[in-house]
Image 1 (spheres, rainbow, N blue to C red):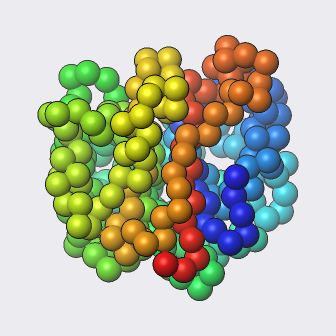
Image 2 (cartoon, rainbow, N blue to C red):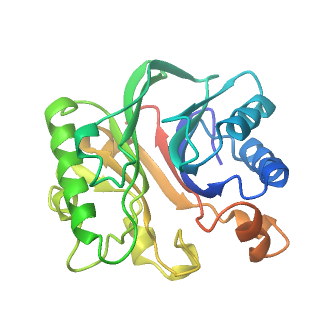
Image 3 (cartoon, rainbow, N blue to C red):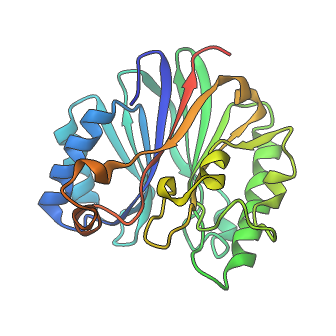
Length: 255
């Protein structure tokens, strides 16, 4: 749960949002209210109207951004502007390489929190076996972009990476090998028993959070949020909300 003394960001693939128009939003309204998070970076948001309705229900301090107004599962943000000052509205990058990103180009929001500037990058890599090379190329392109344009910035990458970070032949090796500059903060989750993995039906842990070295000393914790425990049974969560669990990071204001 978020606090006033930390920057709290959650990545969440809300599968085919909304799975059930009114019930999905009713559940999400209660969940989001209870978590006290600053920013939700979301994947698979298919309805602008329902998404805007959710933001309106949350209150005037919440604002919603969707990368495109389509029926496709778009990258999106829900941002609580009580503590977050958006310095540049969300925009996509690497648009000429959209094939590698499954036509879901990385979606960036630049913001200030407690007078400190951050770059948040929301991604949803190509899914499934057989697409490993596309995920590998996405990783290479994204790291190259960050190294070129945000080399001294406080960068956070979040999203549905659609692959594990503990594989031996790893599509994310370009990040993993540069551990002086990049850290998967959810690595302990990936290495732990499956009960805390983000994709329980497989099961696998494929929703990740990466920070750059500017934030290494600010990292307090990263955890999977077991929301289904608050519902009558797991099938309710799958039927009305998602097949993915949210993963959240808590960062301190000062190192």
